Image (cartoon, rainbow, N blue to C red; front, side, top):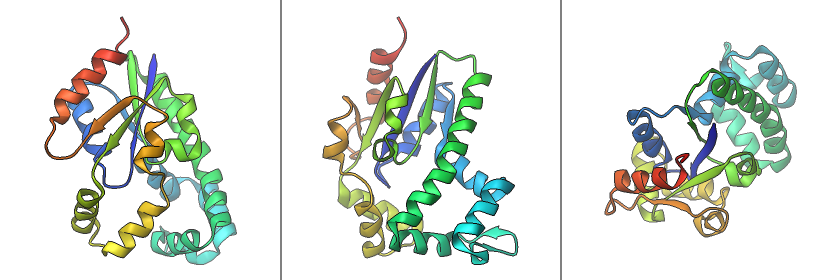
Length: 193
C-alpha cells in the first residue's frame, strides 16, 4: 500500500483535490476533520486540553476553538503542546483507516505535513499551490475573515517555495490549469506498476 500525503497552504485547494480523488474511488483520510473530531469526542484529549488551557477551553461541553486559537496564536509553546497532544491521536486514526483499507493507494489530506516533519512517513506528497491573492479571496469568502487575519494565519505556514524543495508532485490551482488533468498525471507517476 502506498501512502500519499496531500498538503498545501491554507486556501490552496487541497480539499478540492482530495474530493476529486474520492470521486475517482481512492480512499482519502482528512487529518484536519479528524483532529476536530478528536477534540470533540476523545475524553483523554479533552482532559489534557483543559489541563493546558483551563476550563474555558470547553464551554458547555463544546470545544471553544476561538479561545484556544487565540492562546496558541500568541504562544508558540502552547501550540507545540497542543500539536503534541493531537497529532499522535490523528496519526493513530490514520493508521486504523489504512488497516481497514484494501486499496493500493491511500491519501491523507493534511495542512502542515512539511512543517511538522510528518511528510517523511509518506511514500510521496502532493503539494497543492495557489497564488496568494486567490487564496486570500477564497478564505475571505469561506471564513468571513479579514485580509489581516488570513495573512496572519498564512504567515504561520511555510511558503510554497520552501515546500516545493521537498516534493516534485505539484498541482497548480490557479483557476487556469485543469486540476483533473494534473491529478491524472500524478496518478500515472505514483500508481504501482
